[in-house]
Length: 206
Image (cartoon, rainbow, N blue to C red; front, side, top):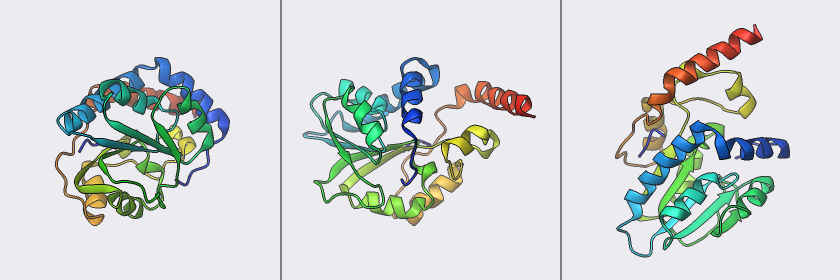
């Protein structure tokens, strides 16, 4: 598991994100890492079923479709604005759903939640709900923003409740009944640039 809603975002936020996702180095690097991990987890699984919760504009699930064309892939998103953008990017099934009250759908081999958990006021409750959508022996792969040292104005604007350390992420997962296989920071090569960028932004504001 990589160290890796109830938040109502304005339509403009989805549009700005859509533009950034196409060109920003952070999204490209992140997509490659997530896509590689999902591929490795499902490549040998026959008739595999993958669900992305909080798929937003469909940026990540588009990458997974490319890598696993024979898998059954479903994207779920609370906000209609995100689903509209995602429908222009992917061919897979897209469903509007609240992560705290998921549909009674066929269960999945792998569920991904990528930079979603930090938006949820009750992460344990959400994780418990997610477990109900996994097959026996199914897996969950998560990305979350790491380190409160990187907390900034951007987190506040994005509606984040927290950033996670390996320990706080593990605590939430264990409380939810998950067994942890791997928990590690995968964006560390970008940490110095991100830290300096956040500090510079704070200085400009002050």
